[in-house]
Amino acid sequence: MLSVDVEKRLGEFPIAARFETAAGATALFGPSGAGKTSLVNMIGGLLTPDRGRIAVDGNVLFDSAARINVPAHRRRIGMVFQEGRLFPHMTVARNLDYGRWMSGIEADPAERERIVSLLDIGALLARRPGRLSGGERQRVAIGRALLMKPRLLLLDEPLASLDRARKLEILPYLARLRDEAKVPMIYVSHQAGEIQRLCSQVVRIEDGSVAAVGGLELLDAEGAH
Amino acid sequence: MLDLSPDEWTAVALSLRIAVVATVVSLPFGIAVAWFLARKDFWGKALLDGVVHLPLVLPPVVTGYLLLITFGRKGAVGAFLADHFGIVFSFRWTGAALACGVMAFPLLVRAIRLSFEAIDRRLEDAAATLGANGIWTFVTVSLPLALPGIIAGMVLAFAKALGEFGATITFVSNIPGETQTLSAAIYTFTQIPNGDAAAMRLVIVAIVIALAALVASEWFARRAGMRYHGD
Image (cartoon, each protein chain N blue to C red):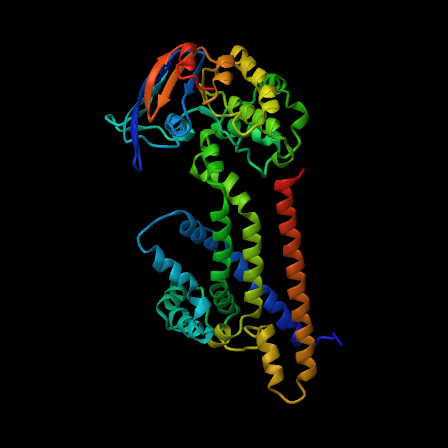
C-alpha cells in the first residue's frame, strides 16, 4: 500500500521515519510535536524530504536517489486538515467540485450524490464556509478530498479543533467512510479513543521517528489518552 | 453654476480617459510586481522594491523630466517605440496616461502586495492537494482572495492619476484638448484674469468624481468582503 522511508531536518528537529501500511485505515499515533504532520505533508507533497523514498501501490511519488519528486497537484492524494481549509470565496458545492475540475475528472453525479448523502451535507451546498459550524466544515472538507477520487486519504487531526460533541458527531461518518468508500486512510491523531474507533493498524511516532508498528495494543503502551 | 463650457468638458473627459487608461493598463503589471514582491525571493528584490516606490518619494517634476528624457521623441525608449511600433508619448494624451500610471504605480502595488501577503497560504496548499497547479491556484484561489486589496489599489491609483499634475505637465505640457487634464485646466484658470468661476466649476467636478470613486470602491469592497462571510 503506502511505503515511506524519509529523512528531513526541520531546524534542529530531525525526522527519520520508515514504515509501510496495509489497506484500510492506519493511524499515525503519537504526542503533539512528534513530527506526524510533517510526515503527512511529505506524503502529500507539501514538504520535500531531504532523502528517502515514498511510494503508493508501487507508484513512486518521491525518490531522492532517482531524483523523482512528483508535485503535490499530480499525486492524487486527498488531504483533510485540522482547520478544514475550505475556500472561503466559494460555496460548499464549488468547494466539493474543485478537485474534480482541477484534476480533470469527469463528472460522476451518482458518486457525488453518494458522498454528499454519506456525509449528510446536502442541505449545505449553497452556503459559504463562513456560515458553517466547525463540524459541518470538517464534513465538507472530507467530501472535498474524497470527490477528487484520491488513491489515498490523509486525515491530519481532522477532529482536533472540535469540541467533544462535534467529535462524536463526525466519528460515525469517518467509520462509514472507511467501510463504504474503500479509500485507504492514514489517520493522524494523538487521541487513542478516535483511533480505536477507526483504525486497525497503528504506527507510533515519537521524536520524529517510528517507535513501533502494530495493532491497537500499541495505544495502551504508555497510557496515552 | 455647473454649466461647463465645451473646453471644460473636454478637460474633464480627457482626465477621466487618462485616469481610466492609466489604471487599467498598469493593473496587470501591478499584480505581477506585487506577486513577485510578496512571494518570491530573488536577487535585486530590494532594488525592484525601491524603483517601484521611487515616484512616491521623488518630486513629481523629477519623475516627469526622467520620463521626458526616456520616453520623449529623442529618448532611448521613446525613439525606439516611435520608430518600430508607431507609439508616441510626447505631447500626447498617451504620455499623460503614462505619467499618471507611473506616479500611481507605487500605490497600486502596495495595496495589492499587502493583500497577497495576508492570504492564508495553507489554502494554496489545499488547492495543490486537490490537483491545481501553480497557475490555477493563483487564478482560482490567490487572485479572488486578494480582490478587496486589488480594488482598493485601483481606486487609489485612479484617484492619484486623476489628480496628477507635476509629472504630467513636465512630460507632456499643458495642451488643451490633448494633455490638459482637470488639474492642469484648474491651474490654468487660476493664472488668468476672471478665471475664478471656471476654476471653481472644475473644482466641484473634481470633488464629485473623487466622492463617486470612493463610494464605488466602498461598495465593491463590501461586496467582495460579503462573499467570504455570508451567503
